[in-house]
Image 1 (cartoon, rainbow, N blue to C red):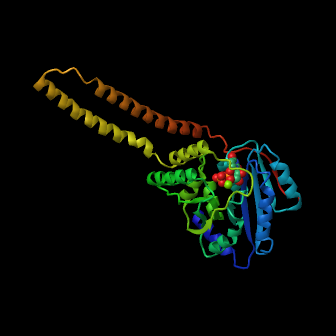
Image 2: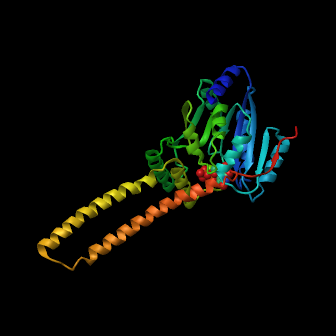
Image 3: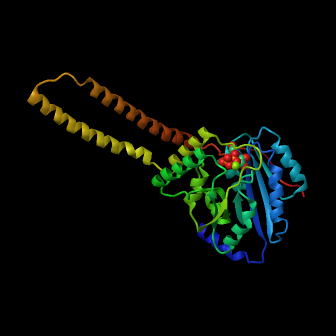
Length: 328
Ligand code: UDP
Ligand code: MG
């Protein structure tokens, strides 16, 4: 079904036809960056007559004056649509909301802080016209990120891609161009815990890259600290692989084989040399080591059980307080 939708859309858009582009922009306490973002987008698209632009801001429960700023911008710019969520649901949920509401032939999720440069979008559109359904923005240098963030990201990609069947391309964030058929496919995925990078990779489609150097944030501060990133990584791995659950079967087999051999060895030793009492240290080491291992195993079971529990409630991914469509 989805394949044919893809084909139909491609055929209906001739090179001269106007293409509708939706930008999906999650914002959380970004009052300093929203107008810089609009300026930058305008400088790229104001002379592009072949593109009809829709800019969807998802206000993810901002507590500063992001919403009034957005409404002010909307009053003079009819391309802007604002979806105000009822609280902070996180970037993944905000993106999900934007993808649900957008109407473009092509859709670009983009950060508001200009770390995903809007200047790249025309080049992405060229690639789309060549026939690609997904055009990823790949970061060639991540100097704008701290050493800790870069190296933990590297480790995350390595571990995730070893375990998960759908690989996440390295150094690629949410910034990408997607054909309508890709967005429709994403909308069909029913899970409520949404690790978007993983979902994007899972749906597949004909993909290419364009490279760019990731600039610094235009203003304001990053919303992701170390603890949030750690939980994000756990989310990524547990959403797309059950390998951590299976490890315990193999570890259990290894340890029971070792203890079986040890039992034979000790029995033979008792038969040959008689009973020997010392051995406290080795017993303590074995008991505490295995105790620790079992706790880790239970912890990992708990991690999955918790996720199944939350998923089983079928709560909505986000709640909308109000949608502000432009009046003109
Ligand atoms: N963001 C959001 N909800 C959140 C956290 C972040 O909508 O709970 C948005 C934020 O406003 C920005 C984008 O997600 O547009 C990326 O956030 P940020 O720049 O802080 O992340 P970083 O670039 O540091 O990874
Ligand atoms: Mg950023």
